[in-house]
Length: 454
Image (tube, rainbow, N blue to C red; front, side):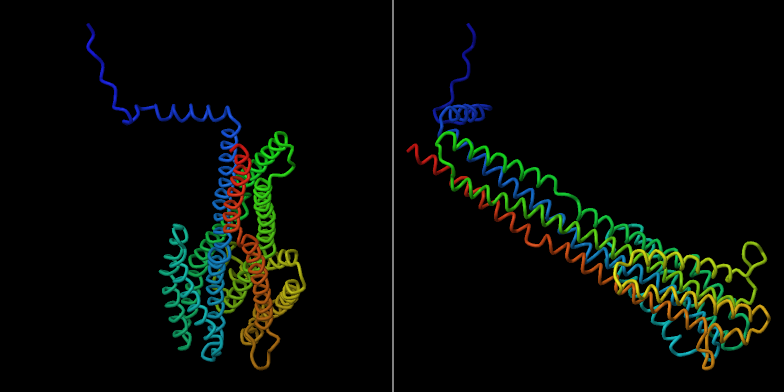
């Protein structure tokens, strides 16, 4: 005789595994056989879909708002700071060579410009180190710059002190400092700028990504709401159910707000990138090329043919000057194409005219120097009380014009980027509130129909 099985559980005791699920499915199946049950299921589905639409919209738009906010308040300022570090270092190198050429009569404003450049670069490096986040490449470049910059300034001070004593060793110190700047500091600053700009473009892409999940969920919610109202009309011959109409209207408002707001944001951010950031990059590169060209022009006089180019015939710094001026010409040509208003075009046009004048004055000074008349060539390059039409004066015109153009494009970027961020303003809170309202309205509309069965 088989052993007896386990006694049945007490009435009301815990259900066996699977029983609760099976009972739930059975109840749902039973409810679906009656109209009130079907209405309850429809109401739950409608409310769930509308709430899901709201949750997905909040999630996706919060991500876009965060990325757009990073563009405005973090990644673009860091990219601009990196460009400023690069520009300050190049300008410091130019100012140090200009001061060296002046010798004991180094103008106070030249010295102050050099000190301001070094101070600005140092402060921006500290700021970049504090805000660069987890970017390994940026941290590496910042560490390299922080380590090598004091070495560079030490070499400049040695060159300056030796030059004031009238010793030719000062020129060697200055050339070595320039080599350190050209081979180590400026490339590191360039890599830092590129890393921060890449991060900026990543934030751009994240902010402009289409909210496909939100749009798809919203369209699905509208489709189910339309089906529910059509079903209601076919069964009751009533054109409108106020609750379902309100739910549809609220859902449609969120969907339209989402589509229009994000479209405007994408357009503004695209303008910030094309009309602002791209122009800024071209202008910054052009300004750095002009600074490097000016440093090479100064070093041509300082070296006096002591350093040869790779062909072992030409003066290295004169060859560098020619290459950097070609790069400057190309950069200004690109900047003119990108400028989209007179406030952007006019300073670039002045820079172009300044470069033409600079080339003419440089050629005249170079010809004088090649004739062996260094004393006459010197004021043609750095200027003095009697030579205001020096190549240095032309460089100052170019530099000031490019600075004005950069300031204008920075304003254009900030305006457009903030416009893109503003277009998404309120959408997160609004979509959440309207989704809750739509879900409540759908339940009320279904509840009105259910009351007819009581």
